[in-house]
Amino acid sequence: MVSIDGKEHSNSLVRIRNLNKVYRRGGETINVLQGLNLDVEKGEFVAFMGPSGSGKTTLLNLLGGLDTPTSGTVTVDGDEITHMSGRNLASWRARHVGFIFQMYNLIPVLTAFQNVELPLLLTKLSKAQRRQHVETALTLVGLSDRMKHYPRQLSGGQEQRVAIARAIVTDPTFLLCDEPTGDLDRKAAEEILDLLTELESNHGKTILMVTHDPLAAERADVVLHLDKGALVEGAEAAAS
Image (cartoon, rainbow, N blue to C red; front, side):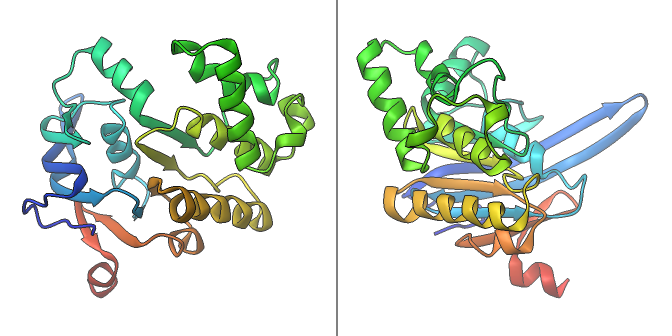
């Protein structure tokens, strides 16, 4: 069960406590996130909404260890990542986080297979094991017949499917999605949302997604809104 009350929840996969993020630009201080608390259990799909500049992407970056908070803690599956060294954090990310972005970030000179294989090159898996993992991931996203295609030979929706296969190929603890349908037409967007829903319901994946799209947010179990640096639940946000 998703909670933002800051009370201890024994089953939390993701636990945020008193999270603050302050940016300083020149003489100006910008409080992006203020005293955030969040608990997410394994296998939940959470959508974050809010206006541009409300801190949605900052929150995702903190959850994925791409940024460090000004104060507070982020704990994922028992690992408190806030004070990890850069090397340990990079190793933790490789094991636990699958990133999916609005722009697919595929390497143009590599095939779909090679793009998906990239995260596995940092592991101790053999070539045969890597091939098995990649083929499984691409089959799961419906692209088993496109393994040898280059990004330029794929549609936008297919490119995003390759990006999702790359995100799940290491079987990460959770997926962080930043506007995953933002660059797609409605049909392709619906197909990507169907895939994310399947990853949650049939494969037990925990998904945290930032989106501006209400139709995308409807797919989540819980919608949280960032408002003036704080998290509020959907109904409460609508009433404010």
